[in-house]
Structures are given as structure tokens and as C-alpha cells.
Length: 328
Length: 153
Image 1 (cartoon, rainbow over the protein chains, first blue to last red):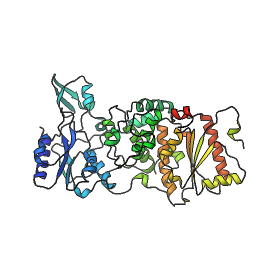
Image 2: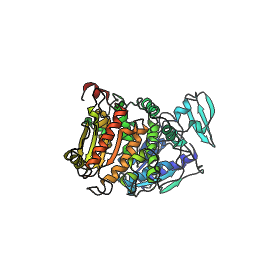
Image 3: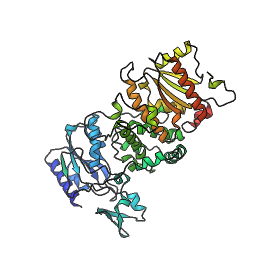
Image 4: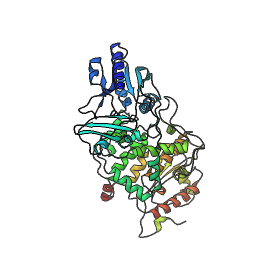
């Protein structure tokens, strides 16, 4: 058990024992060290299964939508990037801020087990990062890997270590600021010809099995009834029959979160087919920044998002699509 | 003015035009009563405001066999509902840019502001758009294969 985890469990137990909160949302031990899953804990006895390690990539803010429906106060552990999603949910009245105690937790970037496995390391029993390196222990021996090679994609383009909101913070070791150009992937695609782009997306999207994991995990997708759950839509939960359905689902999914997506990267993390879904969301973010001014969803829990706002001097669609217009 | 439909034995595109009830739809009417022609393959769908057009409508039109989709609304500032077309402008700027990002030709989609008094503009816009779609040819990238095969869904 690492120091941070100890501290988190201690605090969670305190909160539950003192009846300050009725529920704690955190990560629960899975079958292996690398598959902790989000869970709600209601008593300090249950906390023996609580885990916070370098595989806790899940963003817990969305779980509040359901948990808030029952009475009582809830404590939730959020990493810096997850706090943006929380703000966005509060802004959209999906989560009642008064009922939630946000505890910010330290994060140095989370690890991707698939990337570790692809290095030829099987039966991983533990992994701990420190100073740019990751020490992996497995049944077949130990290995040291370069941290950047095994980080989750979303952590490679880390938004920063600032907590957008937090009632209290558990940070034992200082978190290093990371700087990455998150739009480089989008720019590379924009430079391609239309044919190349179409071929790229056709190849990527045709892998989709319509498991809906991207939709279900997305903290911005919180409609009680989703358009895709409508059987008459022709694209209701089922394996896509042709390229149109694949495109339709992904275009609409990305459009529905445009202007509200905090770029938490959960969609790409959970995709079992490894489709780079964040490239869809980031295109919208990039265009919004270019046309309507820099905007980070979830920076605060009030104000209007770009798509429900307008200025009389906004760019015309014809010139906006050509990519010439810049926000003045 | 020559309409593209007059060209024989050639690909005739299907064009869907979403027209605002308060301006462009009346503009189309004016074009007609002024004896100005626009291609017959432009299928007009009347909407209460350009803002009513959901991105799904656009995709659905392409799915059902449209080769081009054009959105016509009131000039910014003249919306019957005061601000509707300002939202359209933002939405469609993003949506059409996004479709292009996925590899859909950018000229297949267009937004034009046509007022009720601009019958001539309506006719000119539609002729120009139809000409461009004719050059681009059939929409192959964003369609439902089953719809094309069966004629209808």
C-alpha cells in the first residue's frame, strides 16, 4: 500500500465513521492490480477493498449522477483532470454540488496495462511510477520501463495538475506539470487530403462494435434517454450494419458533447477496439478555440458553453470550414 | 439560366435544402412567382427556423441518398425568433468542419442566408450549389448502402 492510498483510505474511514458522508466513491480492488473498478463504499469495513494505484485511470465524476439521486452526502475522490468533469456536471444541474464533498487526489499520470503487456510483460502483479520510470513487477520478474511509453493516451496530453474544484486535497508528493501539444494529432489529420482522411476514419470507425462504452463512460453524456436508445433511429444499440451507421453514431456522439467535452479522454481509454475517439472530440475543441476563443469546459461551474452562446460577429460557416478565420 | 436537370444522360444529384419558413421558403416562393428557375432536383424541406435543423437531419438526408445538403436561413440579425440563426451559424460551422475532417467533401454542405425578398438570390444560390454538386458527383462517403440498393429504406 502506498502512502497516498493510506492517506486516502484513512480520510475515507474518518468521513464514514464520523457520519460526515453516507457514501464514498472510489476505486475498488479488482481481480488483478491493474483492473480496479469504480465503486461506492458505505461503511469503513468495506474500505479494505479500496485501492488507489497507478492504474486508477477511471474518472469518477459521472458516478455522482446516479449516486446523487439517493439522499445523503457523498465524498468523491477526483484526480485533477476529473474535477473539470465535475464542474461541468454541476453546471448542467446533473449533480447537486451541496451534496458532494470533492477530495482532490494526487496523480502523476495513470498507466495503460495494454501498453505494458505489449512490452512483452505478462502476469503483472504491480507497477509503480517514480521520476519518469515505471517499475513493473510480474510473476516472471521485474522490469523498468520508460514512463512515457506506458502512460494512458489521455495522460500523455495531461491537462495540468490544477484542481478546478476541491473541498480538500490529498497530495503528498508534488505533482510535476506536464506540457504536451494535445492538438498535434488533429493537425496531422487536417493536413491530409480528404481521401486520406476518409480512408483513415473509415478504417478506424469500422472497428466499432457499438458496445456503447464510450457513451456510457462519458461524463458529458448524461441524458436519461439517449437518442441512440430510440429504436426508430436506425442506429439503436446494435452492431453497425454499414459504414453509415458507424459514422452516424460517432458524429452525433461527438457533436452532442461539443462545447461540453472537457477532454478527459475516458472515451478512448475504455474503447475495446482502441479507436482514437479523442481525436473527434478534440477537433471540436480546436475549432471552438479557433472560432470562438479559448474555452476549457469545466473550468468553472457557471457560465455558458460556446454552443449555447453567440456573438453577432461570429464567423460565417463557409469561411469557418475553410479554416481561415481566427478568433479576434 | 440553364438548370442542371436539363442535361440528358448524366448523373442528376439529389439536393436537400432546409429552408426557414420565414425567409428562404418565401424566397423560394418569390423565385417561382418571378419566373426564376432553380433546379428541380432541389428538394425543399420547410423548417420553422434554420435553428430547428438538428445535425441528425443533415446526416439522415445524406443517408437517404442526398448528394448535397444546403441550409437556408434569415440573415443574421433578422431571425423571426431573434437569435435562432446565430446558434445555427455556430452549430453548422462546427458540424460542416467536422464532416470535412472525416473526409466528406466540404462543398457538399453549405449555409446561405436568403431573405423573403431575395428570390433572385435563392435561384442563383441553388443553381450554383447544384452545379457544384454535379461536379462532385454522387455522395459515396456518407450514405447507407441498403438505402441505395433498395431505393428506399
